[in-house]
Length: 144
Image 1 (cartoon, rainbow, N blue to C red):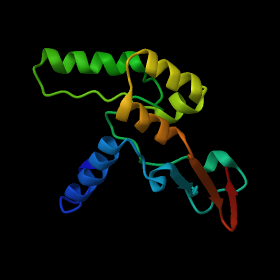
Image 2 (image 1 turned 45 degrees about the horizontal axis):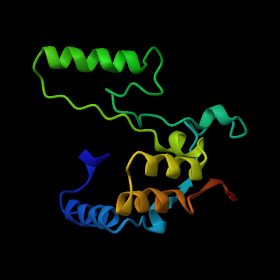
Image 3 (image 1 turned 90 degrees about the vertical axis):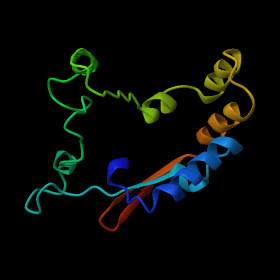
């Protein structure tokens, strides 16, 4: 996603993200998501949820949510690139699963016990507080 952002917007985005990290506050706009499922093909049955899977949204190098791919295949690919002395980056990120399946108070307490305090701890607390999403299907909207 970052590769497709206009270079003119990058300074603004960088300022907003740096401001969030240095203040320990995540703007409420960053904690709200609207999901609008789109049919793969117009002729498909809109009542079948399997017809709403996203198309062409994954990077070709992504291992998650791909048949016959896993953490192991991702690590093998990175290892091969390192052996070939190619530039390599590995990003393992699944914030929704990490934060939505763990008790937030327990997580914040664990972070404190690991020495994460002050602004860094405040940023995590701010991120966890007030998160929401909406699923919009045609004229229906489901809020959580």
